Image (cartoon, rainbow, N blue to C red; front, side):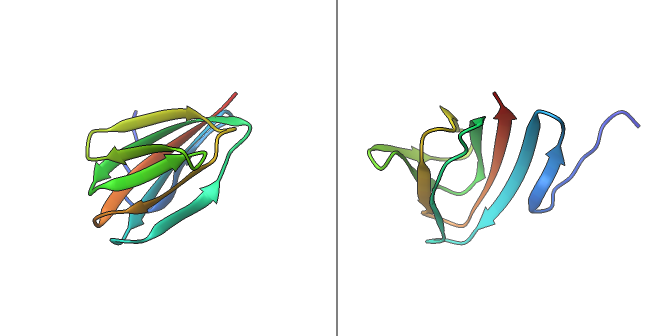
Length: 93
């Protein structure tokens, strides 16, 4: 087999320079403010609707198909505006 398919929540894949995490959030569930200084982040919405803030000032409303990329030195926080599923890819700098 050449590929692996996973659909569960949590750490999905990891390697020497990356991690992929899937989160399933209920409406109004929050992602507390945090950062990942040593990584670049790719935040993808699979289902639902998310309100995300970078450094408490830059606001993004994300829907399925939207992908937010940012340097992990920035702080991210947010909340699920609907029941949502997201993938977060963390890539070591």
